[in-house]
Length: 129
Image 1 (tube, rainbow, N blue to C red):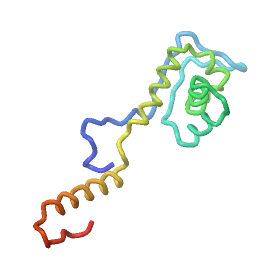
Image 2: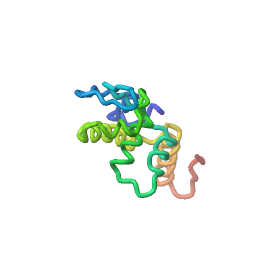
Image 3: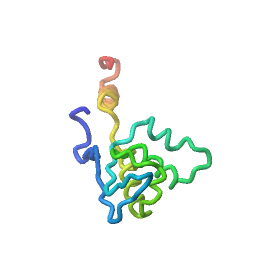
């Protein structure tokens, strides 16, 4: 990130853990917590690759793909819907991240060059960016 990033923006936590009031069981495994890590593009694509899947199914697949505990999809389906909604909100936070540093720095340099060109007296050419 460049030093010119929005000072009000705070990065999304890399991991968030939910403690389940009622642990979920699947295939002899018990899960009392679900810790989500930041999703990768591959995980998001895998979760959304099922033709005709509802939004809830995609979110449950993404939870399964991104859980540090490796919670199977079938077990994720046992998590109360309101908790799944909270987990979905965690994933949605990543969509609001600012532009990457190098791209943002380029945009600011271009904006400065355009402002310089607009304020330059006629006949003078500002330096290229």
